[in-house]
Image 1 (tube, rainbow, N blue to C red):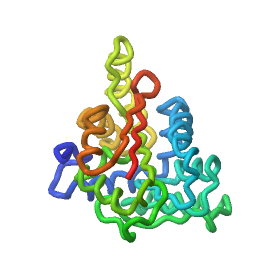
Image 2 (image 1 turned 90 degrees about the vertical axis):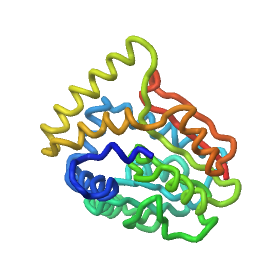
Image 3 (image 1 turned 180 degrees about the vertical axis):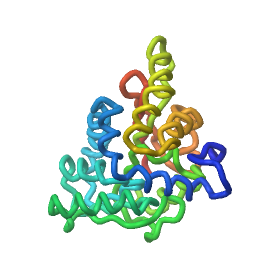
Length: 242
């Protein structure tokens, strides 16, 4: 699923291309995230993390951890014993490691190279799994969801934050214009990667959001799936239980 949309042309797999793209933009990623979303991404992250407040997870896996922003917010809000972050981009992980060291959080938060389709963990390991703006980049979405389910403990919870497609006028029209023209312009200006922020709206457009995504979660085995739109449907929180 979603294999046809890739960051670049060429024979490399989507996974390889996504890793290259994030390596290219790792130095400006945090700045552009907050700049292009007008800071709303911080609010979205906090709302997503609070979906776990009721279960108070002690051990969390953060998939597509990137530079670690979601995990840092989780530490602040949930106070877990341990968070492990995995990502396919070494460049992004280097930024995350630097931030972990600066904040003296190495005893709680560690990161490693990896991806959701082949997680190097035993079955039933984590109380909770989080993914922020990562699932639309999966090469095989169904396989990724299945492997995350495998390493989740029984009754454990997954929380996924992802961009969505607004349906209501005039938000839909304004969003499409912003994503198609404004985002790529500033993305290219600051990141120096011509394709990264053109790929962003393309990947969102191709992503099976809303009920299509919760249906896929249920297909691979998640229970009690829920879909919560945020900011007029610009993004959404998806949750499920093992």
